[in-house]
Picture 1 (cartoon, one colour):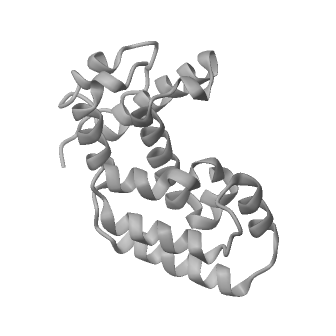
Picture 2: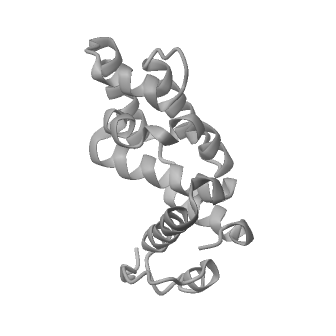
Length: 165
């Protein structure tokens, strides 16, 4: 692995400007900067202003951040708004194993509908079975071996015209 620096100075750069920094900065830091830009766009213009590609970036980054820090339980508690699209988003960036694992995690919630309210209700209730399945999904996620960050960066490069910061 090269000793690339972390890019942490997002200040309104365009997608093209950030992508041009590939090879100079860590790609995961460039993806984080793109996520920040999309988040700022959403704050300015609302979530409905986001393209499907921009929502894919947000969904994948939320999954990576939350599952890597506290597992699927933390993901469902902190980023539940992305759960309805996470499986499709993972398929879009060519991470089928992680898509299947995430699908299994969603099924473990035993939801009447896949929406934030149902997820919140499921997560506040006590369920050893759900927690066991989510724990298994956490392990599978870490063992899947898919380069989610790399795949997301490749997706951003291919779809850069649809990702406007």
